[in-house]
Image 1 (cartoon, rainbow, N blue to C red):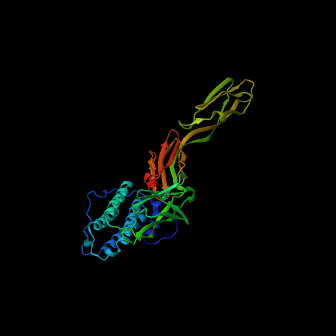
Image 2: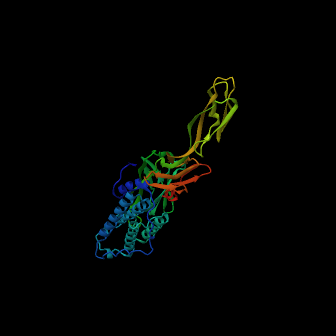
Image 3: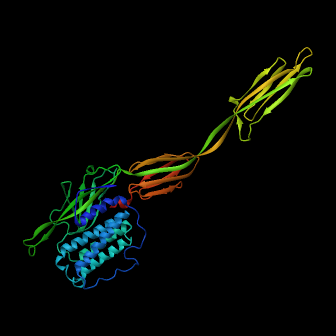
Length: 444
């Protein structure tokens, strides 16, 4: 989700949408770099009007911008927008040539438009997929603009530093590069406040206080700033010149405070203590006359993997008479043993007897698979830590970033997309998910 604040029109209006979708940054498919072996851009028919060529390029760039926005490819979005800036400036500087045939506008202008067509093809084919390639594209625009005839029209072909990452403390440094940007006193208009440009060669730098930007917990926020430039016009040999404002929209994006969320799933292999009662009753009697006659009894657990709990097991003397007794009782975890003895003397009227009651508890361990799941938010500045039991299986870590892109990482760990790394240390019994800010995100 994202918020749009401010309004704009023309190519700047598209920029507001495109930059708002900067939250949808994702790696584009690998492809050949601009200038490498690829299908050549077909030549423009020489009789075609220059304005028609310009419009074709602009339409394709706008389509590329919309597609990049839908795909969350911020590098392609930025390349499309910067190329549109150049197209817009070309139209303003060459209004009188737009009806002329393409083959009659001069080598420099044709080279510029052909360069823009090649850039458009590179964007469409997914070849602007690294920060360096975006930089190379901007450098190419720089060379073409300087070789072409833009008269006194200012041209923007690159801006950087417009993405605000929560958790950082330094002020926002926005840089705008182009051609003829330093005429008069350019400034940035943001929330009704003017911020004067710091001129560094052909680059304008603006410092914006960090406390102006407050992150929404879950949504990306995009605001439009207006870059106010000045173009000279009229006069002759510098005499009687006037200046007019040229306004360009620049979008400033504040990323959401919550980078994403982390879901951890695994199966805990738990050791469960089981128990069941073990009850036996035994007896012995002596019917014939004579002295003590003893019988031995022994009980083992019902299965080899079970044991008795001695603290909760006993053998008690049951019913009987004075000529029957229980003796030599032994209660161990491996078994219970005892003897019942009986006698019948000559003067006894009946046999001697005795009962014994065995009340024991069998105990054993079983393995139980218990599905487990946990979820934590992931911020830009704080690790997410998940305690994991030592005995587990099927560990999966799912990191969903603020763009909605989800990456699944196994117990071996590694990168979880562009914004997080995962480490699992069995010795510490914890999964650590650490946020990261991609270098190209800071550079954009």
